Image 1: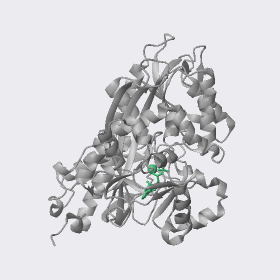
Image 2 (image 1 turned 45 degrees about the vertical axis):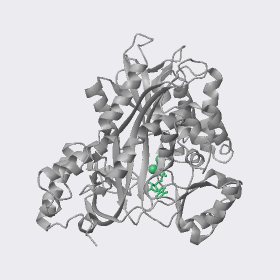
Image 3 (image 1 turned 90 degrees about the vertical axis):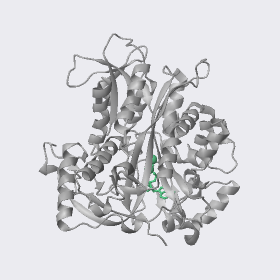
Image 4 (image 1 turned 180 degrees about the vertical axis):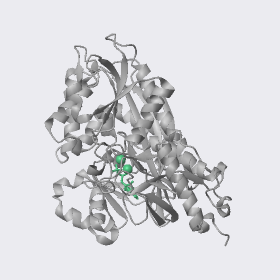
Length: 512
Ligand code: ADP
Ligand code: MG
Ligand code: MG
């Protein structure tokens, strides 16, 4: 048998080599904003009362090996996914069918749907919608599963798709480490410049925001225009967001402000025409007209501790500003939508992607996903999920975002046992994607961990489209492009992969 690159990757390092690599990695990261605010467990808040400290973001020492054909497949299919999810977000009747099964058993989904209905009652005044999407995949290799091998979708994110800022930086970091000979010469037959890929995500996502900003048109109030980043407070991943903001300003000349979600009603107003006006607390005499609202908050029930946050979401949704995402686009990202699309022989994919070739390419990236309802497939899935042996090939997911919400493998039967049967349909059961074994070293919070890892490829997409039914331009797509990639790598002992949630690291590809 021939030796595979996987056998000797990544290379071992002498202590001097490791020291050289880490010193460069740490300094480059801070100097280039490949950084996060330190975790409270790492730097206690009373040690940094002025909030001036940053820490290196969790990163891999080496770019992880990734099959070139899978990488290219993922990038190539993104514009089709953009088209698919924009079509779903436009199809209120279809989404209603999905949401109806959830509203009574998932309060969060119910509240989002009510928000949409409340705006609909008054009439939407903005028919443009922006999506900054991220489609996440793993490479599936297990020949014994029901799923063919190749790139399989983990999930599709329609709200607050993160790490586009840091991803551009980590691919630069790895390239820099290569160019300063921080990788030992024994590895340079694999880690070479042609095998690395720069992610254009920061710049490309910012261009998406700029496209919406321009499409909004001239000010209706004679004021300066701006984009509003609606954010969580505090936010450890703030530099990731700042990279987009700075690219928006430096490359597109568009001004943006950060507004903590819970302060929305304090600093924004709607005029008679429902134009969204923002008055920065730092300069109360200047009011801006908001063209585009970019949500990096509002995706989790934790962001809505009181009714006033729902009032804030409604207030923003009602406005004339372009929402990234609208409530309907947010709902299109429900795991339930992904499950319904993946139903074998269903007419749904064809409804949204009329071109058969495009639809079949998208279909080939679906892993098996089942409902836990009273349908035949649902009954079958319930049996699989209740048995420890069969459940060990599955993950159970609620309609949530942001990591830390899933139930994995053998833990599923006990979890379901405690859950009233009426609530089971709020979850979907997905076959675990089984990626090839890989090794890498992760540097997080000043500690180095070497071992087996699992990689998750995210592909960003920008889509700007026109909603509305009675408009001759309804359905028009004004922008649709693939917007770079993210590789996240986690230890293979952890089922979850979130970098912010504390499990993973940002990474870049070394194509093989
Ligand atoms: P979230 O929206 O909370 O990020 P995900 O569906 O992405 O939810 O699941 C979180 C993590 O769980 C993923 O990043 C991945 O590491 C793991 N995961 C989810 N689905 C699968 C799957 N089918 N196979 C393997 N791992 C999965
Ligand atoms: Mg998600
Ligand atoms: Mg995810």
